[in-house]
Length: 301
Image (tube, rainbow, N blue to C red):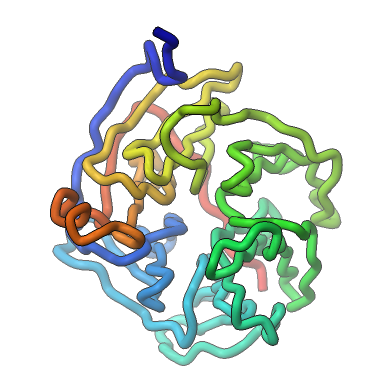
């Protein structure tokens, strides 16, 4: 019998740290200034904030479906909402448009996003019906300028950079591939797209959110796979984090020394019977795998 990509990997179990059961928890980031985790509930139209030890998360409502969020250097947040990029000031609940993107396309929404090492915000879009090739991948510069970097994207998902910022890893989920680009830090331009890792045929789950540790390992959430896997720098999976939920969406390192791996998930697209079998779907999990992540980058605008 043929083996799987996780055979021989070290296995860990994630612990439940917040029983929130959000419909589509996604896009976690660590806010160093506030010492708290920030993530989004896409269909719940909210930015969620939680400090370790608190009994519940605080919600900041958004005026539209939200795909991803980043902390602004001047305080507050920038977010990729359904029709483009919006900002909110620290202590405020009033969001305002910053840069519209395909605002005349109500069939599209933004999905995963993250800041590059210079403080630009990159995020991708997708169709609500997951129609092939309907989405794009965009870069928001601090002055509000937006440039489309890729088109023909189906489900724009995980992205992360190497420590020097010269290499970008990127996931368009249905391709089952982690692509790699050369990334020009002065301009934010992409070049030389090529496959880095391919999820083998027959391997359960789909590639979703992603982050990198300081040893060069890629941690990838597997939607419909009930796990997060670490792809070692030389290839192959050397760590598996098992979860009691199937729709695992993303992960990020946080905590005071960036050694806590926080994991988001969803109950979206589960049947009633499946939700009953996964009572913690949509909640927040954590594991301490023995490596650390990179400090988060704030949006420079």
